Length: 534
Image 1 (cartoon, rainbow, N blue to C red):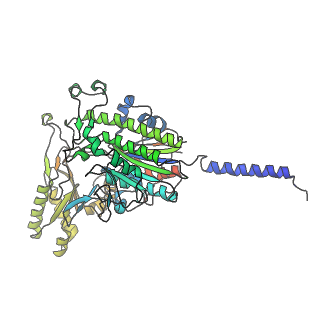
Image 2: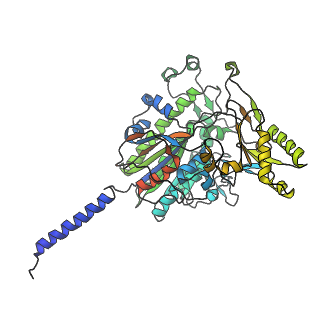
Image 3: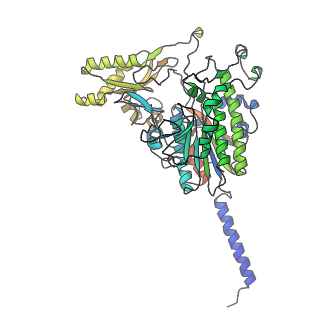
């Protein structure tokens, strides 16, 4: 048998190894795993405003996303969700029926009061008296999967003005999640999370938000003449908002204003630099929320000026964030920015425009329904409360009287349907069977049975919902408006060609898409496939 030349043998080994490496790179797309993933959720962001203000944006902010990223112009949430519930959808890839997060608040029927959906008295607040945890979130998030994939070596942090959004961004396994306390303005967290970087305590002690707000004001960033499509009558009245120490709502006002985005960005950049995010062996993650939602405390019902200014300021904030991310990772990062659907306004149009208007008092509606049910079924407290379109009946009383609960709900719904201002009314039975109007399947998946009421109502557009029901002092009145359940999103990642996708994309597909880009598993309740971007 002839002997193989040793030199030839070595060359064959090298060729084979090179071939194997090439096959491996080909199978993985030949891309290095990203060092840092940044998730951004923006409350109320609208594609129309981005397009209209494009000439006023920097090259490194929204224009970078439009130029270099994938734009999903029509991310569909199924039905309008508040920012907390929508954030849960984005981070889990699952609907409220699965996540346990149907809305920002849940109604405690027995105590007849509202409480935050993630309230957890078993925990202790860090830098605050507020107590929250992700215990109410029933499934894993993309942040959890990043942390698990890194074996606990990589870092996951979340920052948001709102405590519940911060926790949803961090999930169950994050190092920490931070928010601005409503009671003292501190950057706060919960003892559920064990990692509290020293930089947070230093920031609260050395440059506390409480002191900064004393001299802070929000005024237009541009000259009044520079804002596009602004009517002449608005160009003469520049706004100015301050956050005085004597105002008990100062922190809440600030958290709803454009300047809060700069505070979030400042802390996020400090995290990146001080904690060396993006430099570890694995994928780090940093998630933040911003807001461009209509300013609830605007002095003028026509708040277009404040809206445009919010977008222009946010553009500068994300440019700064992107710059620090690039510096930390050399461009080897994944950034996804997802908007939550716009919510109903809290202000009605001026009476001089003669827009049809009415008021739907939740207290009066509940009282009338209770009197009707007493006339039909006998004395008792038949109606236990109202929250977010849901009326809650007294299920214990129904059982005591041996009544058919489904029949009682149907009777109640039929009565409510005759009230002034009612557009639609559905029982929980109709919702769970998918028989809640033209969008019944979406209503079903966005209804969490553990927090839903017995009767769900929609009010006629233009009518104001007066949240005066006992137990709902924290709910603001709102003017009903049929708001789109869609919002834009952007994904910026190495090797992903920029493009615009205008066909509707289910919001539940965002999390598995990010997971695919990171080459990790999807959250455990994400049932949809990733969007084909590669």
